[in-house]
Length: 101
Image 1 (cartoon, rainbow, N blue to C red):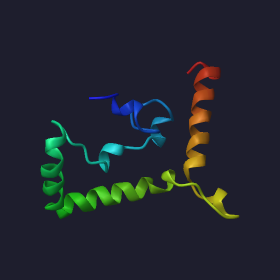
Image 2: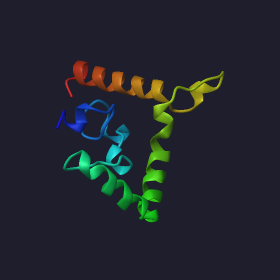
Image 3: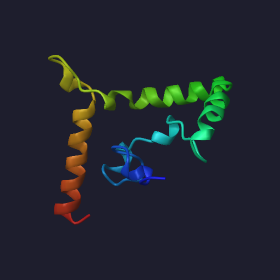
Image 4: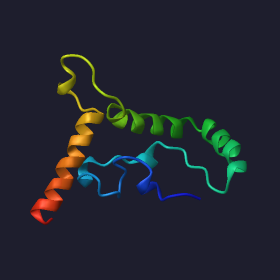
């Protein structure tokens, strides 16, 4: 049903697009529905009835949230954001290509 998740999300765990220590574990917060569209509602209902799981996903998303925005203002360079993640990807690419690792 489409491309592998490793090819669908930026910096996903297992994609080799950044150093493994900087990957984003999307599976820790994204809700995956298996078996077709007819399973969307039951999947969401089951999740909505499990506060512990919702909270776990919320905390996981909070960890990665800065990487889905671009910093604004004069102090934007002080905090990680999408731009810093792109730079990490470029550094990883260049290190692998030019250092033979």
